[in-house]
Image (tube, rainbow, N blue to C red; front, side, top):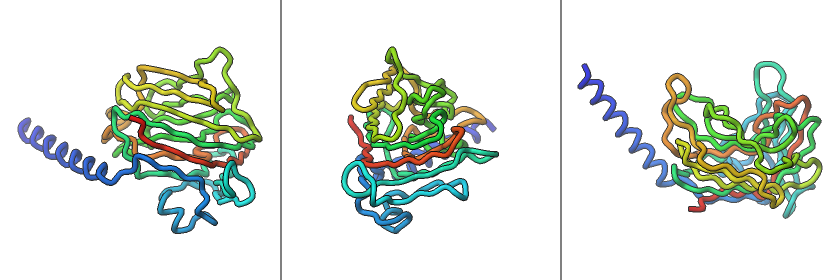
Length: 255
């Protein structure tokens, strides 16, 4: 019995390893989008680059705005009511063909313009590795109880990483805000995360976990590959409705 179980484990592991390598052969490691090439959501050209989206409540919307932008003439507009009941309110898009491996250092940049009734518990970006058994584990950019940007890791069963400056910066409303993130990906406490808001380094944590790892009955089937970035109102768990404009998105491998 033990030999049979071991043989089955070897076969399954080999299959997963092959599938992982085949995926990485065509996966994206450098992508940017200013949303200038789209006129509406969803259109085929948009879905080619952003195959996934989430609109979880009937009144939530995603659109291409041709009247307001950071640069150029267009931006992505996301509107979401606050969460009420059992389903989290979302209005977001997903880039889900990425291939950042454990040990890679990645760079993310995006410009945001937020108009929200309440700041706490608004999520604006998720960095995830879809797994066989999970709910999109990874880390997320969240506005905390004080309205300050932090790195939330609840889906990896890890603590939230707060700002490391003496006076945490509240996320500004009704103005364009430049958010930059740099992270080293690792399933153990060998990664790091650095976060800038309008050019100021506000968060810096080393020797932390930045990729999900298998945990029985919680997260299983991970492959140590960050495959998906979700932007927009990835969750509006605040106490009021929110509108978020997104522009000049970048994600790429640094090293």
